[in-house]
Image: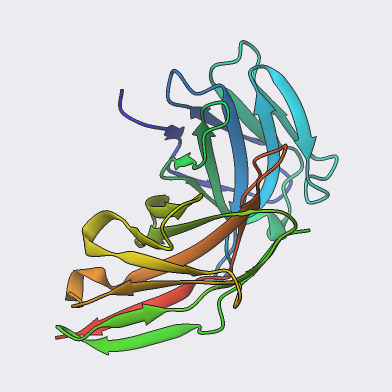
Length: 113
Length: 114
């Protein structure tokens, strides 16, 4: 087990394009989280999955954002019609049921040009 | 709703000296408290957690944290700082019930000078 993997590590895209990120959690972790971190800020919660069910979404997650975890394993986060303000580090984390801490991936840094 | 405050944007300390990074929290119910460290362009690495029990929690890389319920604080400490400890440190809290969302502070940059 190599921990939480995120792909790609970096993504540069033009404003208005769609982007998709992937997260592979630790295999025995059934809970998966997406966070966004902008420069100088702490991570902000975006959404949470327990197995394949998306149980909570932040108000930060506008209609342009969608996340899936189709088989309760890997997850994808898609941003449609990207905007300048979407530039950030997108972090994925996973945990076990009733576990007390998260394991984070290294993140995907998105730059909108 | 739970919240975390890290009052210092940056902490400067000389190598070999003790360090403290401050954190206060607000949560309903029993607090579950965490410290994470972040190096440039990397994700967050877990340092330590307080769930219950002894107020002094020991973690990775020689770090420890002291839980103080009356002051709602969970300060991170290390007896002797290393230059390699220079990084961004985040305190996080979740309440003890239901959904496990962690709420993070804004982070404190620790700079250890040789």
